[in-house]
Image (cartoon, rainbow, N blue to C red; front, side):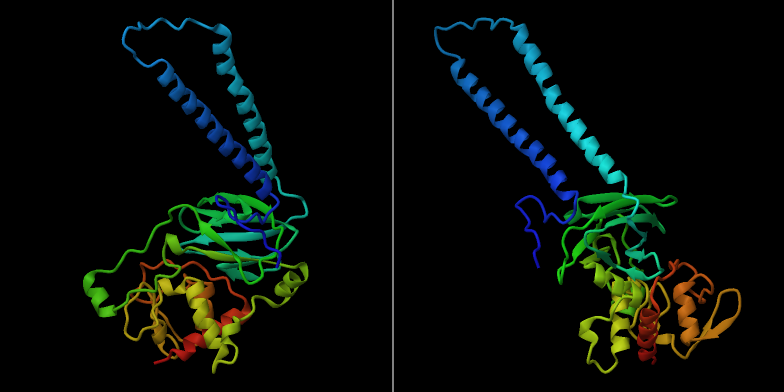
Length: 343
């Protein structure tokens, strides 16, 4: 895999924007270094030449209009270049090509949902084709987030109550080393339960994908043929689940962590968590706030994931779960895992 190398200051260049961004950055960096060396060097020379010495009286240095005009207005040339180069780069990043692949992005505490044009959905993993512009249409389910991928040199806030857009074109496939998507805005952390509840529950929650610092997603850049296959079949099961006694349940267990379900749903028998304990779901009767109940089966689990506010289990009115985005195969895996947890 011909993957570009990182430098001492910058990560690998993996988008069409990266070279322009780096060139402008290094221009500013070396201009600052040279200016610092020249100015400080002259200061040290003048300190030595015009130091106070016995028997010498200081004389006024005089006035040089041309010199003062020169050092006042010459930086405007550099500032003008920086403004033009920066504005051109900004406009290039703002206007996506008309043939760009549009993908919906939904940010929420503390995970990322991606929905492809045909409805294929991913959570905390994004597949994109190489050498094709990709336009992201982003919104936030709850608080302020920010979409930030250093290798692509792109960052954009994801603001509640509005849509924001961002586009890029990946130039290299990632192979088995996906690039990482970060949330670059502090979007909060879970509140720990009271001490007595924590003692009763033991470990309150799995901390992976359960706060701002762990709101990460893997972006896999693949060939056009691989992307078409992915769109047709949906996300594949992880290779490590092949050959296990229950591959579907194995996949569901990993989805619980990667999709952020572990932040609110415990799988420890008797543990108290923000949402209903999954070990008490399959085969048990769930009583709802406002009346009604349902048996914990495939239909109940599916609706609870896709429409979490349709029925609120008694005692969990404070929980506000966002709708899940899963393919049919992923949903089957989650159901198989929850079924395997039956007490």
